[in-house]
Image 1 (cartoon, rainbow, N blue to C red):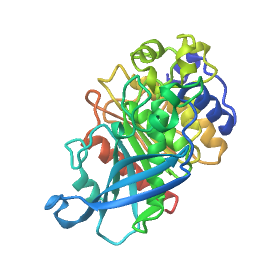
Image 2 (cartoon, helix red, strand yellow):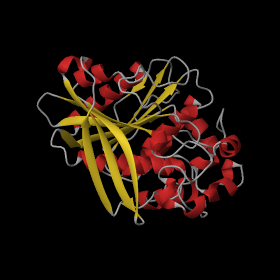
Image 3 (cartoon, rainbow, N blue to C red):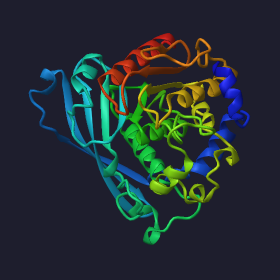
Length: 350
């Protein structure tokens, strides 16, 4: 059943990982900003007592980056278990600035031995069709972008990589078990961040849908026309000028997921999230699988049909789970991510 549907989508053929990544970054997201010429961190205490009942150290960190002779600074929060490390960790591209938060079960994550480095996306640049706030102010002269300049998904991905720079300096964090994760538009961002930075060993994209983890051709719910009309700032200017017919694009989203091979990818879907389209997200896992297999690792292991509610497919390097409910990122999603990460890192001896 699932292969019949995939055949109908008539996807562009698999290419080398380098070629696929270059095509989709150039044509859709825009090339990421350059690495800073200079980067510094300032660490301060963050009052959380009695949060985590003494089991974690939680700090707010200011990351200061020099780019094009200008300085851009943004904060993130580091929650790290007090137990003996080094610890696996999540770089969480977060819709909300607060830690703790009802959508981020820090105490439970800490109890599983994981650290969380959380960054609020609007602290990087505002989620609006303007190009003068935050990081944009040091990238674009007078807020004007060229055709292949980065969109805001690329800017948020860039920030997650700067947090990874800091993680490399912290002996309590295990770079061999570094994960990046996000929900919805930030799930798209997590995939892009991992595809463009091999230091991320696992990417989790939750309900990312259109131009994220879902196949674009014949997708249900959100499509290219509304996403470009409502959110043009997410993408490179050239992408917004392309035809709205996805079948005319020289790529599809399996190019993005495939670019992460042979590292791990987990795609999360929700049965009521028709706008993201769970079936198209699962199809992307299937379409990406040959890239992983060509790299000598297991791709997406499934039973030949679309998932039912509560099913999870965790045997391959590409994982997938479908939960009941609408478009959100909650405790159940975090627990599936931890389960998948534990399994995969253990299998490869990390």
